[in-house]
View 1: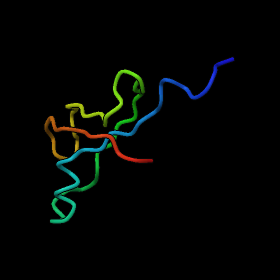
View 2: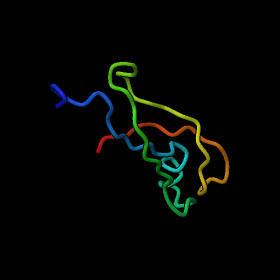
View 3: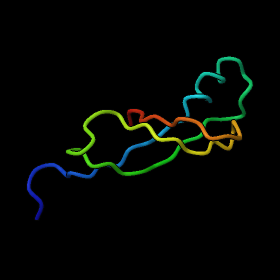
Length: 66
């Protein structure tokens, strides 16, 4: 059995561009990805460049709280 907390945790990445556009009502939705990260290697918030189907281009997706 594993000791203590799990090292790898599931995180949700949300598009930063859609978040800003939702105020202006230009976007049809918010793009989200689900991935895992190693808590020991990346203790800070995760940011990855992923494709956003709402913006129709590659944007920065940042980790959000569950």
